[in-house]
Amino acid sequence: MTTTAPVRPRVVPPPATWHDLDGELDAWADSGLAATFWWRDDDATTTTPALARMAGMSQSTAAPLALAVIPAEAQADLAATLDRHPTVTVLQHGWSHANHAVPPAKKCELGPDRPADAVLAELAEGRRRLERLFGPRALPALVPPWNRIAPEVAGRLAEVGIRGLSTYGPRRLTLPGVTCVNTHVDPIAWKEGKRFLGEAKSLGMAVAHLRARRSGNVDTTEPTGLLTHHLVMDDETWAFTERLLSKVRHHPAARWLPADTLFGAEKGAH
Image (cartoon, rainbow, N blue to C red):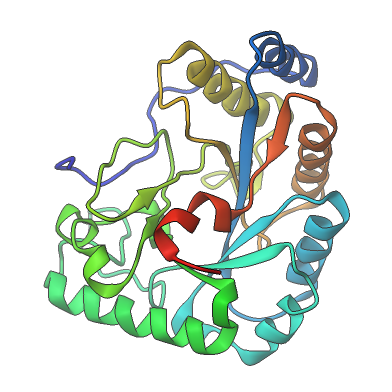
């Protein structure tokens, strides 16, 4: 297992266009390969107009959505909403999305600042709460808040029934009994007012990961992951997301994968 927690890649991919994305997907088709994608959205707790919009977008575009839900804050109305949207599954977004890191360290809920036993106990309670609220729709897969997790916690996730892990950036972790599937395209400029990052930069991330997979420079079997945050998306981010969902859906070499397929080998029958 790696000795460091997953972090966002430091290298900024070159900008790209929709034409570049088409060209990369065509290259996959020419190689006889399927360019697989998956979609994760973070920070859900209750039904909001934005959440309802996202669930509806998932259903209308036939793009399965993995919704990362904060267990400590999850409300029953969210379960009722998702019952109307079969394309949405639930992942575990930490416990309460609380920052326990001591400045100047970056924000982290599942870091080394507390005993691993205490962190794992919270995760186990979160797992039970999501199962009570969402039943089999809740997959035993963890999304660490801020995409950060201490190695001593990651290495013991299977002890509390967690069989999947998703952070950000090309996967490098190998964990006992846990499948790692990350995200790679985040269209929000977090340090610039949480506005849309822009088509060129967002598509650059997608094209760069696809190209790296096709050339074997990263794990070729890890699907390219789209990461969204329904609570902070502006109109441009919504428009980009919908266009990307549609683009992948309609290209013959591309397809969206559901989270229960990605983490299904570890979670048992569902």
